[in-house]
Image 1 (cartoon, rainbow, N blue to C red):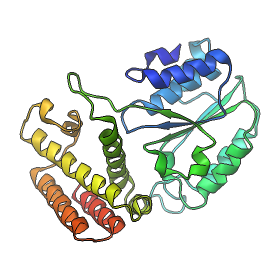
Image 2 (image 1 turned 90 degrees about the horizontal axis):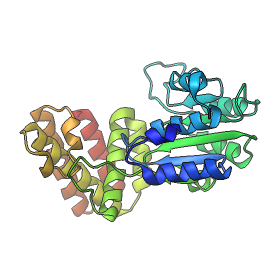
Image 3 (image 1 turned 60 degrees about the horizontal axis):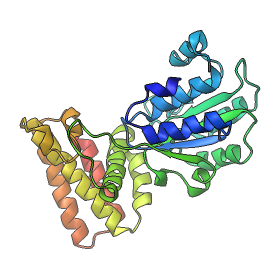
Image 4 (image 1 turned 120 degrees about the vertical axis):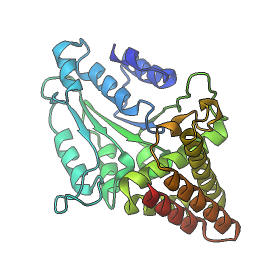
Length: 292
């Protein structure tokens, strides 16, 4: 089974394997976890089990992106502006809805994988909600996102949630669950801001709102991330890293790292001085994105 190749995500794999074994495959799933933990790989493995249970050439076509019953949708720039911000727009959702209404071309199921689902903009989440409320038969939709707050609760309530745990470097323990979840969410925000720019930053600001504790956790996480970058830049041991050595993979000059730390310090002072939590996080992510 393709799912047997998935490493370090036993709980997620067990949920999917049980659904297949009992014949109770949900019409929609939300794969939630930080980048780099195997969400997309697991989604493709699950798709292979559904459309090519015997493996062989049919499964190989899924790997190559050539199977007619497996579609991967991700953020793209506007058709009118190839250099614009990449996002999943309402037109993309309408096209998914149109394809989902068709019969499978050759398999028993159709699978739609929506990568970086948090990049849905404008009316896209509401349009997507309609598809989830009236799911076509034999259609499975998998949303891949970094944290649950990235989409409206009305959307996620119609999906089976499958959580993916952060991976620890060998010999390094994970953070305690409570702090780990807050920090992984903040790291996801930092990644979104640096990959998608101002639009993502504004969405993150909306998610923070007036919640001072969430903003403080975000600022602290960015501070610790840049601290890890500095440690890695200086050749420090992986055991010294807060985030299990992952910052060692980030490529930053010393000046960029120092600028990031300075931005984090100023954000911390701002939020302690009763500056708006939302504004503090938006300004910090803007400065860190610029520094990157």
